[in-house]
Length: 210
Image 1 (cartoon, helix red, strand yellow):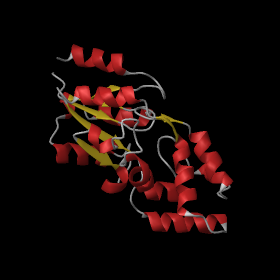
Image 2: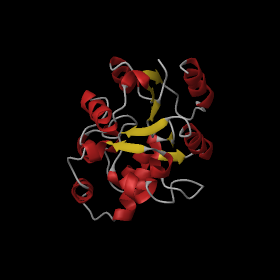
Image 3: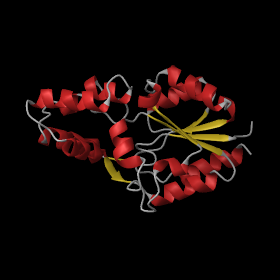
Image 4: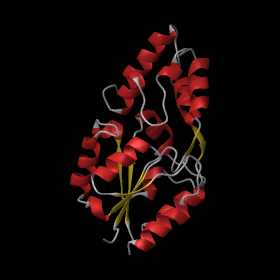
């Protein structure tokens, strides 16, 4: 069946990640057990609550201040979160724009409002000075939907909202459990490694299903 839609993950796919650096930064500002909560695929504790929309930014920051036992500035917290980001290769973003000439292109990401509103959805996101939303037909962010991958409900929400057919959709995600969920819906899938240039692999899949 012809592929008409492509759904991309963000971290580890479009963005090169370094979870250890983010943990180091959170520890530096006073969150000594940050390594127990931070994960490249799905966070835990109050970090998960921020990603699944159960805690807003103010509640999250107040929780961190309580854990740290001291005042933390919002700028320090943003700085710690952005430790995850190593690089945003512009060639991948340009490739998304090329794909949109033939396909519907979506983002499905476990992400949070601090990363999105303070960085990704601003001109600081790319060297082209374009925010992330310029590169997609529509974005599905876990904190806005209230569900994180690999929960099936976030996929079901995206299918219903977008009207896309899973069997006509390629899902590109670096998380094994997320890929398993996509396969269970009948999606075509590709699981890249963090930092991989996956353009040829995606092109090959698309060519095979033209």
